[in-house]
Length: 249
Figure 1: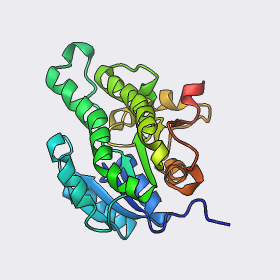
Figure 2: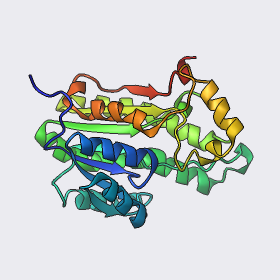
Figure 3: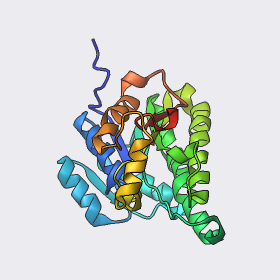
Figure 4: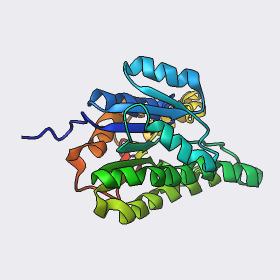
């Protein structure tokens, strides 16, 4: 019987791999056998991820410059060959009240959270299509379906990610490229640091779940491996909430 969760021989590119969810998923995929490339703006955190994983490659670049994405895609293919797994984990949440959102902050949020996942995926699809196999995993959010204070731009971008995931699946699934999204609940990351720095807010978030606690980064491992592996061959266009039951309560 084939190993449904074996990623040996696969190449995974993880954006935002220098910290938080990106680092956790990079480590999980490496543990399942994938050759991993982590991409981000800051070289030191990326190097820390490589040290934690043991074997991985680094691409340093600014994803916000959309015209540079084809070049970054080419660089990502140099260490191990063209990626056949893409995890779009890079993200930004500026937490601005609606009255303080500027055109610049709005555009920055939508560029990183929504535009980059599409244009980077499109730059990698040709190689996936040639193999007849690929995986694109986006990172959605509770705010894909729920509104939170100071979340106008972020919520708009993550609502877009949910629909983008379905649209990507419609465009590419027939060619063997499955497109899905993970929607985490509250996990300790750089983006959620303000929540976890406030014991009352952290306790409130935990109380909204059915399990009764906030997420631990290792809680994402199984979902990430599943969506990247042969086990999910017939799963596409889905947003899987890993939130302890937050959105179901």
